[in-house]
Length: 143
Image (cartoon, rainbow, N blue to C red; front, side, top):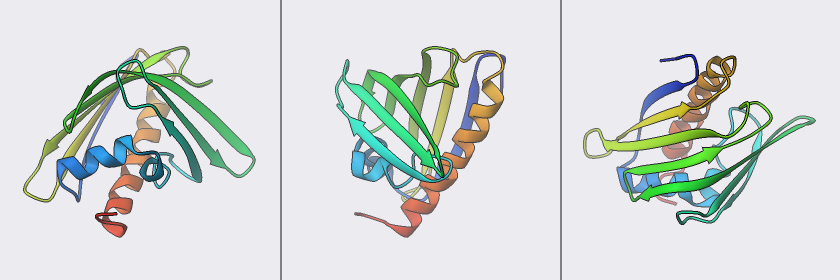
């Protein structure tokens, strides 16, 4: 779903909730999937008020994203700010994880406070990122 200043994406991924939460919060795991394409550098200070830094790299392009954790409720919810040259200022990402059977998790991302022309591109980006997360969880279970 895409609104004027928000994008909402949902996907079921093949791992239990606690495992998926790890993949959202541990830098070495984020580096396996947290970009639509290419490679990732990740720095995480996982505490309310802690900082998050994701650098998405592909060919000659590097896009830095910075944020601050506002809410951490393991293993169900993360809320953090998200800012890059493409967000139109500080935006807000809410990630909700819910069990979908014993070995799967429904991931819902709501990315809000986006510039009006940024919601569509961010919906596409998050869709590709969640596809990569699903593949990574399938290919590298329980690392």
